[in-house]
Length: 347
Image 1 (spheres, rainbow, N blue to C red):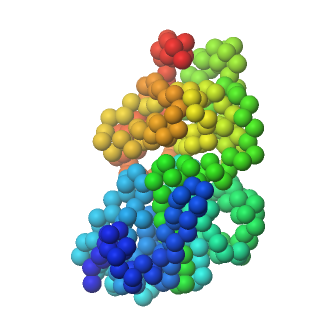
Image 2 (cartoon, one colour; image 1 turned 180 degrees about the horizontal axis):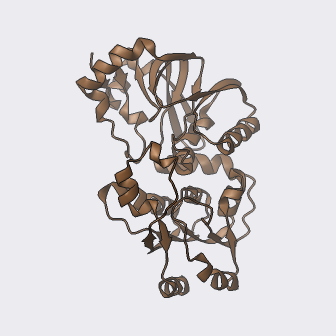
Image 3 (cartoon, rainbow, N blue to C red; image 1 turned 135 degrees about the vertical axis):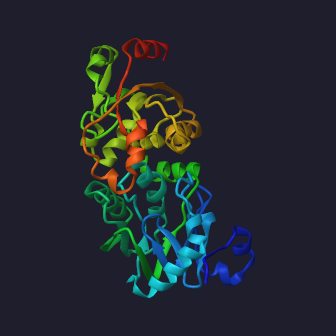
């Protein structure tokens, strides 16, 4: 039996399909979360569920940027392998599937997965994440749940495989604007909005490190900028930094997902690699899209790629060697000083 996708219209008009979901609405935001409940299979790379009767719901469970290719789930080849293996999948019960990025990408963890945590109604849960989620992200989750008086009975960590879940929940993904609204509503409550100027350093990062950053330090400091290595901060501290900023300058980085917490009119200058390929479009417009949603003053400046010699141990597991070699996104950067000064003075 092949996998079949069910369109939203059919779910709305079919009582038996509607019963597969729990519906929760945040009345203040007017946002409804549909959670698939009961027994289902799960692809833990995409956190994409398949019901016992071989249904999927792409309207709810395709990532917002649609970067992942889902058509493979609907081929005969996939169905044959899936049906052959499904009785061998490891099983879990009574779980809430939050999910997390297989590469522990902060943007995806924050924008795709974390908003789902605010639609938990149980007081005790077994929480499902990918095994490669960082301790830092797990600590962030624990603190959020603690604030909401929800206890984690245990974490369930998944590898890249398929699993069977019984009597469990998996919330939908949200549109970008709804994810931002959910995050701001729940995480911006106690932030003091003292305006500051921030330059984000990537000197300890494995790619998109601005190798001539020292050329700009005197100019930045003379204009009152703080140079911050964001990786040294907790996620709550990162939120406060972005919420209190009036200007943010940074090489392209997943920490720019925190732009979701900026005040309107905040100036953002992104130092980007030179994108060359169509598959890079999602990365090219990712942070500009957040700025557009929040009316931030966005601009960018392109930097030249510098071939890095560091071994991309984590990325090699998920990205082909060809992409790592060809895409400037996975290289370090060098920025023309005059070009930067011109843009800097303009802003």
